[in-house]
Image 1 (tube, rainbow, N blue to C red):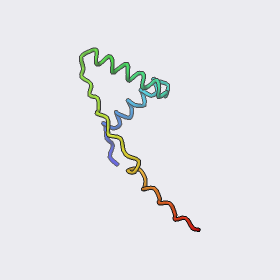
Image 2 (tube, one colour):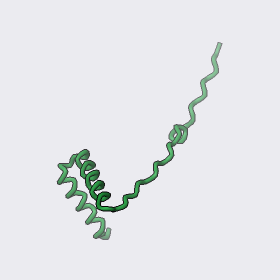
Image 3 (cartoon, rainbow, N blue to C red):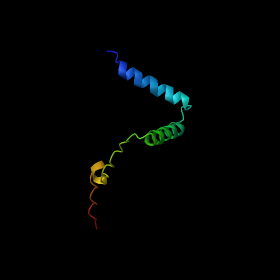
Image 4 (cartoon, one colour):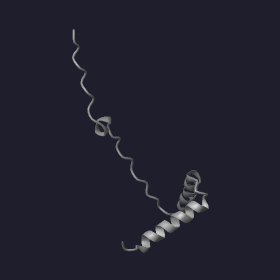
Length: 72
């Protein structure tokens, strides 16, 4: 498989960031929130994705089975 310099750089940066945060997901998100606030204070526009419509339960599983007829 070909080596992709862009992907290698992304993986390297992610690994460095994780190491700086002690591989703690909560700390990683706190750092990202701090960076986001700093960028907004500097005047950067940050795009927020629109929330997706909730999926119905029927879309996630089969229709419920019909109850069997009662026998005398």
